[in-house]
Image (cartoon, rainbow, N blue to C red; front, side, top):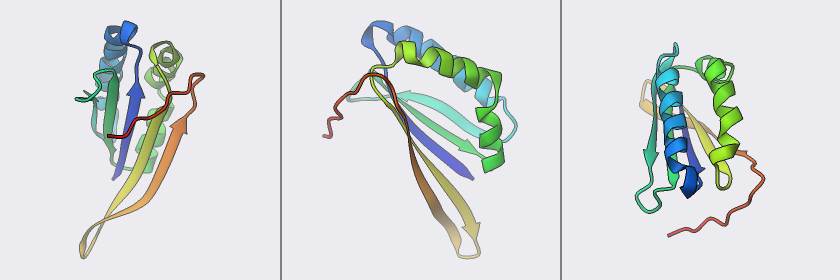
Length: 121
């Protein structure tokens, strides 16, 4: 199983538009073959920080997701609503005879034109 976690800082003035874009992306992605779950969440400490959590049956299913029309549209619209960088982390989880084993942590960053200092609480 592949797990992807992402953070999306959005501009306050277009937050509702960003939420609608995220809703549409989640609905379309959940309909894809190999998608186990795909959901955006609103950060409690910063309502303009949206969190993405997705699970895929395989790397091939995730790769297929990257090649969809709705992903292309999402990436086209995304820069208009972002207020900083998108950061994602991808994990691969395997089941062995001893139980679950988490492997292959892979941080990813999608650079954006505006840099924003990250505040850690």
